[in-house]
Image (cartoon, rainbow, N blue to C red; front, top):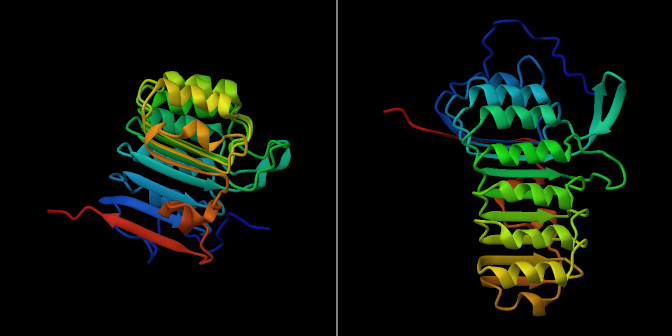
Length: 282
């Protein structure tokens, strides 16, 4: 079993892999193991200028890491979290869920008020069992607290029509992408015919809604981009001419084949991924 304590840890010792990160702008970490004392929490505590963070299936990730991020990275504008369920210690015992909870969402909502892009992926979570550490209330709180323009939800089987109704108040939301969100029906999707700023809509592998719900969106507003893939109850005839750019396919390319670098690299078989961008000092 993974032990989060490092027996070689020495308090206040500067480790040789410490690096100067005060000017770090972007950080992407994938398929690594982090530990409490000298791991991700230590790094994020030093990244005062961080604007973009991508964490892909990080083993040992906890709410404490995200709380540290929110307390120190006030300029954060984009966050991508790809999570999968694992055994987590709770007061009532070990539970099988994704590692982050609403405590992380609350910290981001309070500390990262410039957050504009959010991608949350819950991978391999069963829809019939609450394997997601977030609640719908926690997600809505984050979406309503920050000026989010770009939102991606994948595998969020806890997010339903009530959640869709709540994010209507996210008045800056321009791009919405839903993947494998099984609880959203026509009643929820049609609400976004009235979303004040929505111009880009992507729906992938969502079978809870049909032509009836999607048609209300496309008839009420002119979208810049509409992508529908693998939604078995949505037909091509509904989306023709619905946006400046339209793509509709009954087939879904698969999670690892999506044209988004953060997602593709997160599913890479290479066990460790490190990438970073610094802002060069004058």
